[in-house]
Length: 465
Image 1 (cartoon, rainbow, N blue to C red):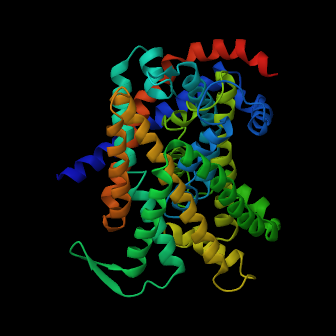
Image 2: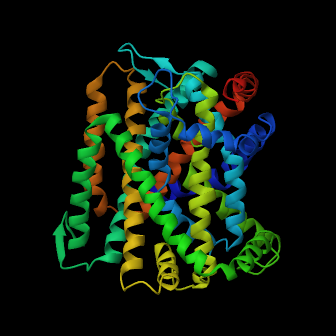
């Protein structure tokens, strides 16, 4: 067995074993301890999200912190991940139901992450505030070793996995959907299309312009781009669903029947149900990152002194990412019947659904909307994960070596330029494995600090009502 085969085996063991149990278990525990906070306090969370009465210490507004987190979570998973999950070759339409359930439970986990990010926030020697899993592992759990493990895996995940490689793959794929590939170019001993080369160069330059401006510029860009790109995508998918409203009841019936093995893509029964569950939970976590520990890094920079406030705002990210955007993608795929096409995979399934659903638009417009959405989603994910990686390096060095953060930033941007020329299979293996290594210590902290979170939430939430 080679190195990559061994890493792929370890990845599969983690995601199909402990994480498939621990992630829902953390959601169930926090849902119980917080008394269904994700349902009872969701209206309050959205009121706080749009409130202009921010007060307290921090770098950015709570809304900007949420947009920074969303910039990292709203990505290829909302378009490609959903298509992969509901495909007839994977979990079928029933996977969408399990994605909903994992997101509902994940909202309680996301609340906990946002709460703990502010509750155990620290002040660095230079006066700046920092929060995130490393600090609540160190100060809450009293396990600084876990914090260092989490920080190392996060920095590597940004540099070599989900932050750069996978997102650039999505952007190049989007460009090649919309544009003529052009002539082949020889680079690094291989042959690549002109579109790939130009796309990689342009995205690298744009990423440099934003990332080199630091956390403030990343947050400003996310605050501008995230609402716009989400609005464009919701508008396009909403138009398809509105024009096929009569098919929605059958789509929901198919989702529920498939989820419980009553009418699954691959036959029926318990095996089909487990397949739908596995794909739904895995893709849901990949999309919204609940339990992964990434979002609280951004939440720790929010301008607030009330951890309950930021916890509530943070949990709206899972609602927006999965219960809104992923749901709309899944319904479009099911309503248009593209999920049944065994000749398609990945983004090609979503493209087929868009072409069918937006047939009344001029040629190329539906492709353009999907390509623009995929490219924008992936680009902002690049920005968000650079922020996470830099905060991780800062924690590992104790904030004493600013040059280390700048070195990481330079390496990150170099990887963005080189990512279009790297094989995709190995990249996804590394990304999934590093994400699993992030999730395990973060979940340990959530379980360990569950009682404290519930008790302090009960006491502090009265100030927001």
